[in-house]
Length: 567
Image (cartoon, rainbow, N blue to C red; front, side):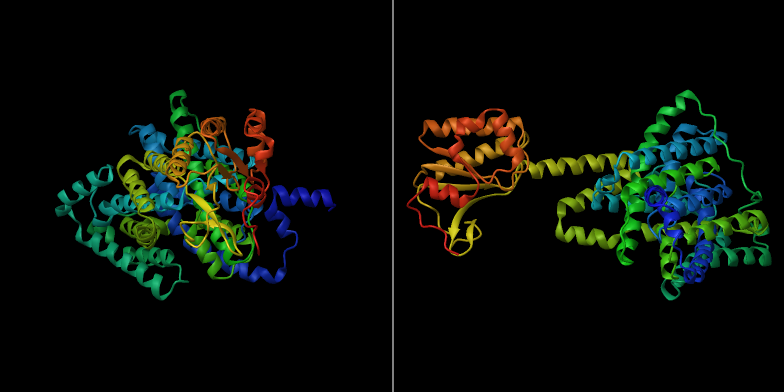
C-alpha cells in the first residue's frame, strides 16, 4: 500500500486503517468484548424497539449494520453504535404524530426518518460541522436526558403493572396511571419488580455481569416453568427468524416535511450524545477522536440501520462501558458483536417469544435511571443558578412539549442567556502596580491611577448588542472621575471583534470627548479591530499617533512625566 492509499484509508476508513496494523494478541480481548457486548445488546435492542414504537425484532435489525459501518469508519476504539434509549424515545416522538394512529405506517416512517438522519449526519461531517458537538450546552444535555428518563419511566408504568395505558404527555400519563392503578395485575408487577431489583443488585455487586441478558434468560425460564402466560402475564410473542430484506420505504409527499425537520433535530442530538460517550472513553484510554469523521460514521451507521428496516442509532453508553470494562481493544469488537446478533436472528428467536413484557419494562426503567443525572443537577444548583434553571427548563420542555420543542426552547433560552451576559461584559479601570504592570484597580486597590489618564479595558468584542452598555459605562466613568481625565485610553487586548455598530459607538465617543478636550486613544488593538477602524476611516479621526501597540507606550506618549514601569 503506497503512502497516498494509506492516507486516503486513514481519512475515510480509519477503522480499516487501524485493522491493517492489527496486533493478533488483541484478538482474545476483542472476542471476549464482542461476546459481552452482544450479550447486553440483544435484550436491550429488543426493549428499545418497543421504546421506538416498532416491533421487537426491529431493534435487532438496527443493531447489525451500524456496528459494521462504525467498525470501518469510526475513530473511537471503544464506542458501540447501537439503539440508544434517548434516541429511540425521540424517534417515537417524531414518528407517532406523522403516522396519525396508522400502525402500518410506523415502520416505513421510522426507516425513512433514519435514512434522512443518516444523510444529514454525513453532510454535517463532510461540511466539517463536527463543532456542533459543542452546540448543546451541558446543562441542556443534562436536562434533555433527565426529561427523556422521566418520559421513559412514565411510559413503562402500564407494562410494569400489567395494564394498558394510552400514550399521553408525562403529567397526563401519570394522572391516568394513578386513576387506573386498581387494574394492576399483581403477578405481572411481581415479575417486573423482581427483575428490576435483580438489575439494580447486579449493577452494584456485579457490574461486569450482563444484567439485561441475565434478566432475559431468567424471565424466559420463569415463563416456561411457571407458565406465566396462562396466569395473565403478557409475553413478547413470536419474533420472525432470519434477516430482513434491504429496502427503501415509500413515503407520501405530505410526510416528507415533518420527517426532514425531525431528522435534523435527531441528527444533532444523536451526534452530541454519541460524542459525549466517545470523548469520555477516548480520554480514559488516551487517544484522540475526529469529530467530523464521527459525524460521517454515525451517518453511515444510520443508513445501514434504515436500509435494514431498523431505526436511528447513537453511541450506546452502557454497551460502550461493557466493551471498555472487559478490555475491548479495537473496532473489531463491533464486528464480532454484529455477527453474534445475526446468529441470534437466525437460530435463537423461538425462546424470545416466552419473554414477559414486564421484564422488558424493567430493563427500560433501569436504563432510564442510568440516564437521570441528579448529581449534575445538584452541582449546577450550587455553582450556577441560571444554568440550573436552564436544565430544569429543558427537562420540563421535554416532558410537556416533546423532545424537539423542549430542546429548542432550552437552546433558545441558552442563546438568550449568552446574549444577556455578553451584553454587559466585565470591564475594568486599570492602574499601575509596582512590578506587575497594569491591573484592575477594583481587584488591586494598591494599583495607582496615572494623573490625567484613564485606562479602561473592555473584556469583550464590541458588537451591536453591547455597544450601548460600552458607551454608557465609558461616559459614566469619565463623568464621575475626580479630577476629570485629559486622556482616555481604551485597552483593546481582549476585543477580538469590532462591528460597524461598535465602531460607530467609538466614533461618537471620540467626537464627544474631543468637544470636552479629552484625547481618545487605543492600545493593543488586534488586527480585526485595526482593520475595521481603517476601513471606516476612524483611524484617521482618532489619529494614527493615538493607536499604540502597548499600554506602556501609550502612557509614555500621553503622560511623558509619568513614572515608567519598573519590573
